Image (cartoon, rainbow, N blue to C red; front, side, top):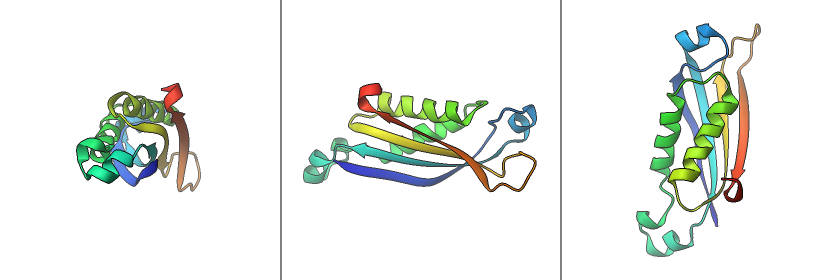
Length: 121
């Protein structure tokens, strides 16, 4: 068992509760952590035996371009697709953060972290 982490993925997207957020957009940061089966890949040195983190990134990227009202919804969509499209993931956690959210004060970011295990996928 091993861990693949993709940290600091940055996207400009159009998510938010307020209509202005869905028109103007905002910066988002995404961190992904996947607990995966690594034994076969560690022996074979073959990408076909590994969880391809380029594919994982492309899933995150595609889902970040689909508008949502809530960070929770974005995070769950990403987890659902990861478990659907990639073999070998045992558990995954994703953190989606909105940078400088329009909340009436100086706030660096607001974020949501969701986790899912294979049994729940």
